[in-house]
Length: 313
Ligand code: BDR
Ligand code: CA
Image (tube, rainbow, N blue to C red; front, side):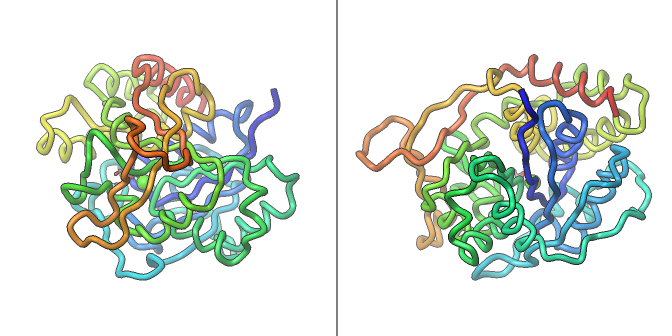
């Protein structure tokens, strides 16, 4: 099988970093055409910097990195330093990047890639707010039907919310953008909190990363050491949830995941439930199916894959 062409759209974020490392370590499965940064966990300047730090940690300095949108479509940016730390990548002590940021805007890169590759051969992998993707769809509506699939981390049904009682962070930050993407007609796979909260870095799993003894393995262990305190305190969970790596793991081993083809709508008007993913998991409406909503994963298989691939870097 030929490697699937992907564009990662991201706001690193420790879990974004692990998702990127997994993709960059798996060239036989995914060809990373480029990485676009978006404002989310921390402001754009930091997500664009962190993306390059992660590429350099992987030893992949030739991957083009672009800065995209610095704020949501129609509202102020909400960030998550309370989860990810001041830099967004708190934990390991990693050097500032020396690889360049590309001059082109991330949104224009997404548009160009979709226009210049065969239709149906480029997959978009958003790991943060959907601002860049929605902006690209608005600016160049012709690209929508050229997208192979959007595989994204965002939303929740059973787990409801993490940034508000009703909403997950990525969707909450830019609900209008999410609404555009979910209504676009593009094929969508969603990794909601329902599944990502099952991808927990327990102590033995973290020990396995550290035991790799490589800069990437040790950095991932240190990132999850830092990142876990938030979910441990909040949910009493066994370790850090690896939200975003569920996206890249799905591209490599979809058999590790299971879900349902359902309708998902985004709340964009109620202040109380803003950004909620109203997921018709039980099929109680006749709204049309627009997403494969993942609910479960084989966690041991996921961590085996991750550890095996990180060992290559
Ligand atoms: C999502 O929000 C961010 O904090 C994480 O990087 C992840 O993409 C989880 O709600
Ligand atoms: Ca993210």
